[in-house]
Length: 236
Image (cartoon, rainbow, N blue to C red; front, side, top):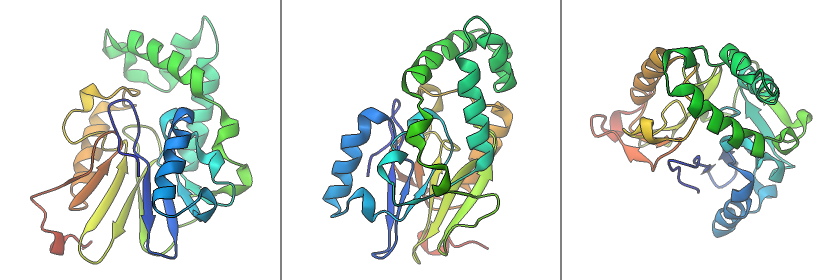
């Protein structure tokens, strides 16, 4: 669908001919690109039965509103955390202190606060929880499993409750990683929030890379892991 880049998140269509699943939906200005990509597959937003949000950073969720007939599977921990974060970022004069509740490692990097300031302006420009979809559409991954053939892996290094997806197509195991795997090897170039916990993020990244043979990162083109033969990529 829409490949991830240093500035934009990937949006991925998973389809078996009967069930159409969209993983992450992007930013508002990408709406026409997303609709166009669906049209090239012979689909409309109303043909997508399920949306999966890996997490609730603005670049991953703000075209949910296109999918009014879809169920939206997502981690509630990430949803609640992000809504609190974006509310606190709006507090003028106090947001630097409040952001430490969400990103405690900002204090360990002299450039992180200025970086967070730029990302705050970006987030405040785009964040609109009305674009997330109706609350009745949501199914929380903590309590409601995905349909057969889809499996969620929860990690918390990037944000609390982040979900990556595992899909087995009989030949290989595909990991739609979201931002648990920002890119193949250039995470420092991705314009996104810093990890909540850098050490945990690195462990999460290693874990995700051990789970499949084909990967779709959150902010890069898909790639194969040459160390994992496709025909042996099934779970143990």
